[in-house]
Image 1 (tube, helix red, strand yellow):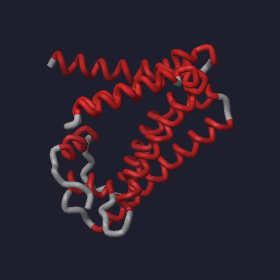
Image 2 (cartoon, one colour):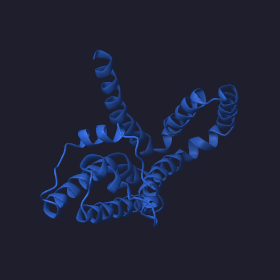
Image 3 (cartoon, helix red, strand yellow):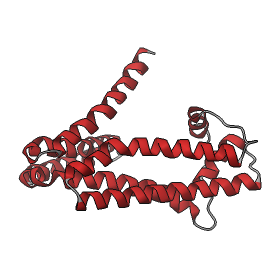
Image 4 (cartoon, one colour):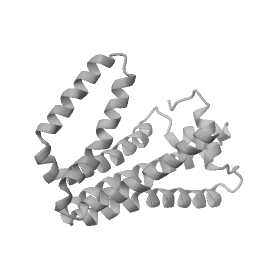
Length: 212
């Protein structure tokens, strides 16, 4: 229990401190070294985790070592353009989420939100299937819009302005999207059982089913 609390506290501290530090470095060009370190730190850390868990661990660790050498060689350029790394990370995540939802809307596949609902409420009524498909479309549009706004702000406004959007508005906007969808769902599907979001996450993690 204590380890779980420490883990969640660590995650919470990271979620709070990283955006603050990223925004701090985005406010001035004098923070180039720190900005490059903050921008590349998560990339190198994730690469290390994947390399360590890879069946070809020695090969992947060797590739990671070469990447670190390349980063060291290009460090002066990174200190000048670390904002570009920030943008690529944020925009890339929005595009990944967009593709995660949008690809399930292709004919013959089950929309992702329909799959989520089916895990909790199976069997679904035709009305519920239509609604959950529309929710999948809404999330696809949301993440596409986030990527477009991020790109527009990055290239058309100062880096500090973009940073406010990316670091301080992304999660609240996602939360607002969840709240808005919940409100609409209560109006459109009043007879549908409404479960806690954590219960939905647990149920989804415990099922082997995947979108078709």
